[in-house]
Length: 336
Image (cartoon, rainbow, N blue to C red; front, side, top):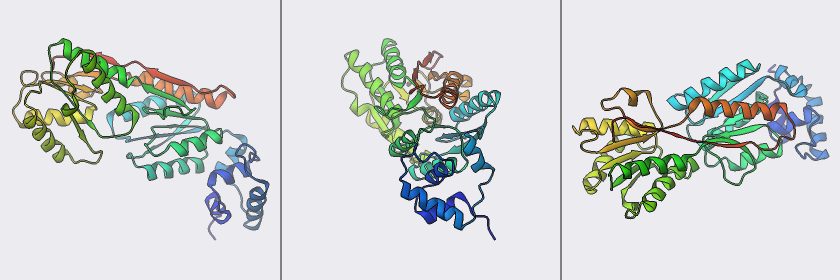
């Protein structure tokens, strides 16, 4: 006979796995769970002869010595480096890390949060998808240590560690203007995620402050799932339509790499044909000829601040929320 799981109990009771976990560990008041629900769950536990496994037992002590790390794409250079640094710091503090990627999918993100609850992690660092606000609010109500990373929900009382994306894009755009560029195209992903919105806002604000014409027609946006081939074609059409463009500012490094491919395929020269810069550094950018100027994220600092914030929330009660914006750094190379 298959062993009865926490999920089985939750399904039969018609409640969440988190609710069952809180009841098992005598924390129902923390989750504002009604006495009727507590009684119902306990009745099912008794009928099923449910025996909590080692994970459930760790919940009773509150010490599973594991943390969850949910990012957009663990294979991405940025997130891979972040994850490695977080793992190193966590290990030094006696914690193991469980990794997962959302692929920017809301449903997958919710399922991963539930999985982390099943694993009874002591805290979670998450790069949230745009539709995850209500789920984060639920974690806050349950007093689960959580730190948002890379992006956040303005106004939500939750800890986060993010880059100052607005200023990074503002400073890069201002630099290009000072170099003499007047028609700077911004190539980005159409998204409500605030880190990309802030990069676009920083770009637009810099152009306004430098008294350049409205740049709305010089913004090229892709949907998240646009294929590489479609992006290349769209860039070509965009530049053919906007012949005055003299500089290209890519909002992410993976878009910047596609930009490099476009320039190569069309036998265009950087910076003779276009000034060329990107938000986010990449190993490739350092070794191209010319090397690419970037807005660099201090990856190790961001990762260290995120794990330090989570460990503080885990170890100390009533610490409040920890919210940090980390400055970006312009790395000037030869592409502009």
